[in-house]
Image 1 (cartoon, rainbow, N blue to C red):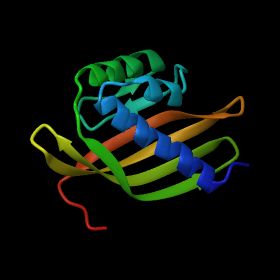
Image 2: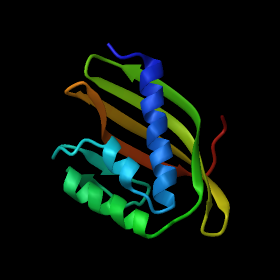
Image 3: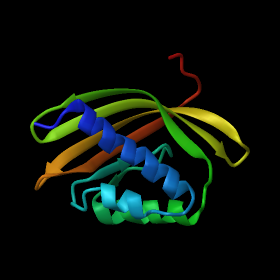
Length: 133
């Protein structure tokens, strides 16, 4: 079974992929995700609920093309690992987008072992008006 530290490293790749996407490079994000029809992406927009890789990838491509700028970092993370699934719940902070302000986020990532490779199958995030860590 995979260790929590291995999942933490994989999850850190997600945040690195987000930072790359903010600069217009979606390659790392596309490599991290499963390309299956059952993936789910629920981003911080209230209307964002995508099911399936095709529509999820279209959204990541659009975000990459927007060159949003800024960066994101994890503030706190909790990991649960099972045989073929792992969940990561996190608090993060996004800074420098648009007007240079920052916003705190909470989110969940779920990874699935697909033929020996851990792939992201669910990402959900919400902005928070405040967070006391």
